[in-house]
Length: 226
Image (cartoon, rainbow, N blue to C red; front, side, top):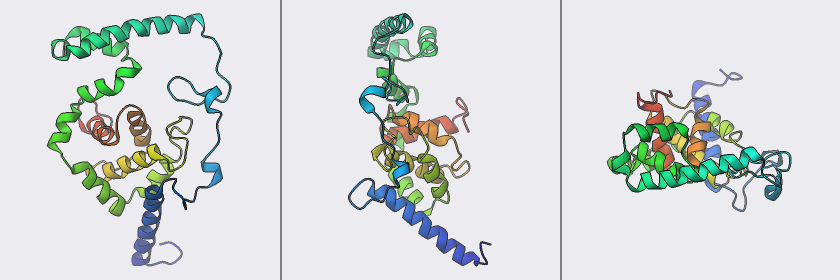
């Protein structure tokens, strides 16, 4: 017990804390939002952001190295190959060449599309129509992991432009995905580390797609990430 509080009093305190945290994410950065200054650091976006959206402490080089030029040449070549493969997906799907190209790396611009195809997200969304919104509402109301999720969202990829602002759109989406998943898969619930996976998915997928992608990665034996 906490300071002699009864079980009922502890439950009331937990419910109030959960409601307060959920309320902050609901409000986001609108007028009236309370954001602690140290939670919302300033960055030199123009000078110190790389091509993937990550912010660096030092200014990035003004010119590319020979290694970077070579890497970009390889990427351009891969983009052409992947564009051809995506346009004829059924022809390449499951073939040895397909697998080899995945292991070599999916070009950044195609990752969201390819991940969605590999995880059959459109099919899952059709089969589970409305389920994500249902789980999100239940999670915001009942999840016992809200406090830990809030703590983890606040320290997930804060060096990335999408997640640097406290309670901004991507932090809101990340919070909602995690509380929804904590209710959707109660056998696993929420585990620290999920926020990193979900945030990475959000860099390339929309909110609901990222939720179902996380679900697939956590629950399917093929990926076995839980």
